[in-house]
Image (cartoon, rainbow, N blue to C red; front, side):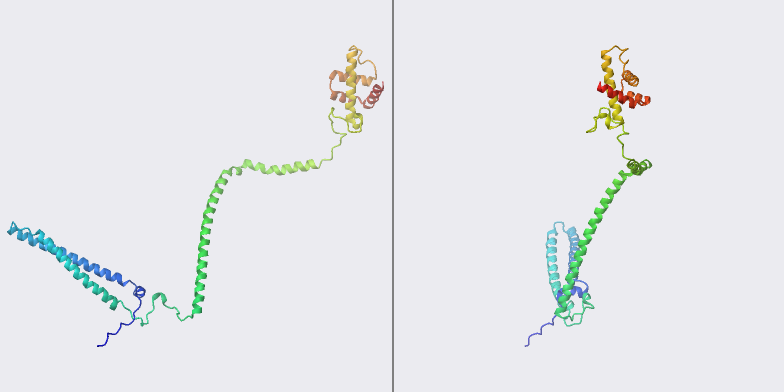
Length: 300
């Protein structure tokens, strides 16, 4: 007797869901679950039938209690029924996987995800394609990283914009019309600076020097300038006048000497101010005569 022929090769079970559009094992599990539910309903219906039959018998024989016998009978019936259902559907599942859901490997079937693909590439071409796929993956990863950076930058820019708006709100008082006057200050300062810079150099002879300031190096006080001479003359006249006032009576203190110098000295002693004496000398036009009298007083 010859050995039975081996079954033809079939498509691997992992490809069946792609070819059929569903998982065969899930379909068989649903069918078995429905059969088990029907068996349970059959047991429930049998229990109700036996309970009515026992109630009818108990009404005739009051001493008979069929509860225990009914429970034992239902358990046995359920166990036997479930055992037959399991054995029957185990054979059904195995037969379905070998016959219904078995696809011959020699059939010209193309999987949906392989439709339109050219599977006649050489190994070198496959390596190039794989390298291209790796490069595309690297670019996709870089784009995702760049997207994350952009998203982070957008969030940070939003926070900076919010802070800038808050600062702008705090500085909004600078837009008031009263603050516009400050814009004219720089131009006014520049005008003042140009005016001061255009002034001629200061002439020491025309400047009012401090009477207490000393003469320039190498020059006597009356040789520095007109103002220096007036200050020196006033100082000499007031000193002489004070000395005479101490040594002579008040009526004879200013009776001798030049009339111009005496009048100026008397006026200076009365007012007691160097500026008043200088103004008096200028009004009297006695600057030259006063200098001569001062030289004579200095040599005497």
